[in-house]
Length: 362
Ligand SMILES: NC(=O)C1=CN([C@@H]2O[C@H](COP(=O)(O)OP(=O)(O)OC[C@H]3O[C@@H](n4cnc5c(N)ncnc54)[C@H](OP(=O)(O)O)[C@@H]3O)[C@@H](O)[C@H]2O)C=CC1
Ligand SMILES: CC(=O)N[C@@H](CCC(=O)OP(=O)(O)O)C(=O)O
Image (tube, rainbow, N blue to C red; front, side, top):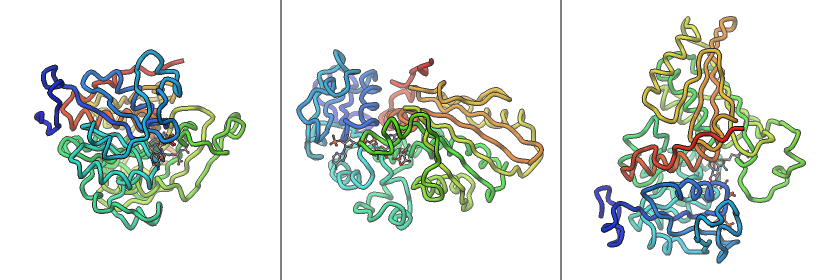
């Protein structure tokens, strides 16, 4: 065992600190993004990647971006087989599937980061009203909602992280300083988010076809997107009182990126410059949150491929509203990057290890 409670092989003990990682559901967009980032992490070795449909195939045959970089091949392995090999498991499965395998990893004493929604909602009744029956609700109290900027200490102590949703990440980070400082009327929050199509995953679907998305821009799941209770849970926790939000997601003809615009009525007179200062103070020392200059606003193009969340704020003096714009890459800060940030924390690595990518622009 190393000092973080992770069992080390003899070879690793003699060579130093290499943690063995398994990615369960590695053929999807977030799974392959986890691998892309983990291959450049100095403290881990990826030992297992699973897929049912590509079992036996080298990942480089499916994702040529990995050609010459890894000889890993997909396997259709049962959870206990992956648990035998790995110290840390990333679950990159659809919701309702994660909950079926998570107990096997948990009971084998391994550390788990679940990228799905299965363990994010603290109230199982709320989960079941949005997602259907929860078959592993006994594990919900064991998990920590993994937004490092807000819950770093809890993440450090857990061995089961519920990695936040992509839309919620952008919205929670964008709202936290205003809510914590009582700057906005909590009954007035409206959020308008736009996502690239990789947010829908790699599973073929008519709505994700090129002709359906290209040259278009539409709202979807208006009033009933399943991220609504997750956003409300976390904003309520920050505000210390129950919050309801109006949340409307939109689909962008981009592959990656989420831009969220948050509107709320101010509770006091304040200038845009002062709000910028308040946001800067709140996120002081946070490596992955960047606050724009007053009058400047984020662009998904400037976070693409990186673990940054960029935030810009403004005060609309005419309407007495605060307007916050936040941008992330849904596959990085919205999924794999945040998952690795959480792993770094609970494994004792520097939090930015493997995550220092500069955004890919243009
Ligand atoms: N895409 C995004 O931007 C984000 C996604 N998430 C969440 O992360 C999770 C993964 O998303 P994403 O990568 O986009 O999804 P994909 O549909 O792209 O990938 C799903 C993966 O799960 C595997 N899988 C599906 N069903 C099963 C099963 N029953 N048993 C074992 N493996 C299975 C698939 O492999 P195969 O079929 O080959 O076996 C595939 O590797 C989801 O819960 C998603 O909601 C979270 C934040 C952002
Ligand atoms: C564009 C698009 O379709 N996005 C997905 C977000 C999926 C996602 O990542 O959801 P979790 O983080 O909860 O797993 C959707 O709206 O369902």
